[in-house]
Length: 144
Image 1 (cartoon, rainbow, N blue to C red):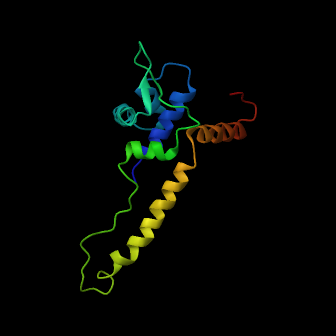
Image 2: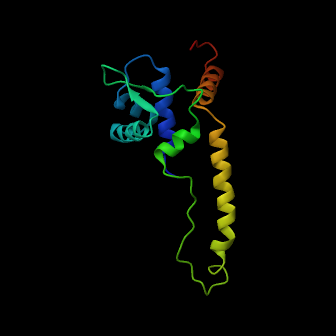
Image 3: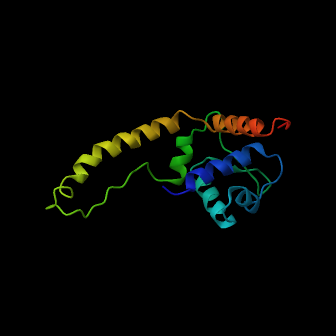
């Protein structure tokens, strides 16, 4: 699994919670990646209708409320589907190679379904609340 999902969540949290103008460079600095990668992620989020341009500016806003946007929405915006690949060229004459796909396929299908179910149960707002709680636990004197 690549980092598109976690970086997309990171960007959406920042865009949702920051009142200041955010650039792709600022988001990239926070996420520990480069600005072109952020622009790619933002493009995918726009294409999935999770982000809109703020009228009259180059800023972005969430296209639906954060308490309605699920992690599954975000995951599917940056990944075509939840899928665990099984290698295709196993030797069919081998006792393992001849049976590995048939054994792993139902296991990975259940894992994919469980992942989708868990992501669908969690909203962007819940992630924001958890980040806030984690920050305040680490910085008890802070006010955010």
